Figure 1 (tube, rainbow over the protein chains, first blue to last red):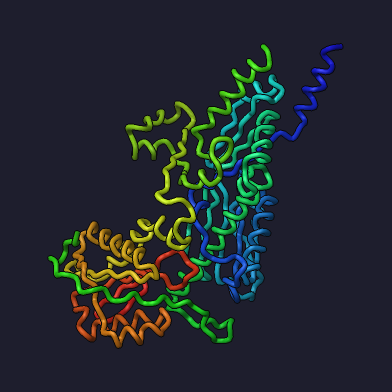
Figure 2 (figure 1 turned 30 degrees about the horizontal axis):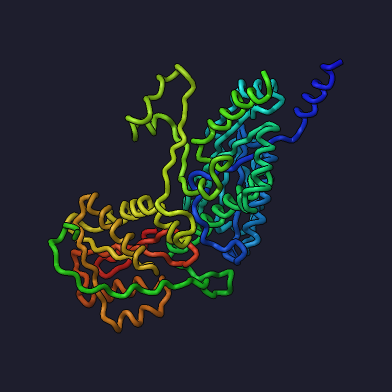
Length: 258
Length: 213
């Protein structure tokens, strides 16, 4: 009889949502973003976003990624099409015949770099009624490559991040207490905040990389006039020339001055 | 085992084991976590860079390959300098290396290279120029630390032009005025839009400007 309350407690605790999700930006995702994601940075641009599924990311996952990327770029003035190949290695036609080619082609693919899940911690967690936390973590890389309409590679980058999940009533309680008593609003740690931080970093970097690809394509094509804007050139912010330096003292050619 | 002992034996050590983890959580705030630059690399790569600190990976087939989270502390905390300056300076070596690799293919082995960086912030422009000069020297090129100077009137006109017109015209003027001789080349490194954190570059050789990237 005395065992039944304990068993009931064990079941209830096991079913409690005691998960603390932490997001840590690694290489690339920590870089500062300069473009204003609410400004029309891609006005008049046609962008094709291709999200490539693999063993770790299903076509449904990539549908979501493509859909959100489309929203972010459309918000910045771009005309966006998305494509998620359903068969591995398939490069089916992304656009209808006769349609204008995209100015930029963004390819997104993900990789799982590292996964850590210690079984002994799960056993201890269960035996301790989740007082001892079970910890799982994985490190992912989001590969971004951007090509121009001819298919030439403009930008290639890999954005790494890390997700750590602590499962347990004890760690959940400690984290909740820290969130309530110690941490400021933007320092709180929970799944919703982690998702928002990851979205902000990932889509910020994708926007920045797309803008870099756009300016690089214009430079390499010799700054063509923008036909879509009615022959008006895009407003490029000129960089004021650096004032001429004072004439340096002559030094031997080929050697750097200290 | 009473609950207090259980907590002391299992719960606290499990949490304490995360103290050295750079991720935000119980021991580091998000702001502290963002002062670290971390990247996941294979143990082989890290062993090649730091053999004294990371042991050699096990032989192939003995165990599953392991990887390492390599972290280094940033010199400046996020937000201490403008986002564009931070973006450019944090990736300066790789950017300049790619630029110099493309540019150094032009010219002759006897060509003397001048470098100038056109960036709104003079201190950052100086760092970019020095990085490019260093890279050119490391590739065995002859490098001058002098910068071709144009007349004040030319600069006044150039200041009102867009980048696509500025640099080709400045190149032609420098060659015509003798500021840049036939056996000399100018590597110009610049940004062309205030919203980007990447560098573009071009080479002025014999009065002709070529965009590199």
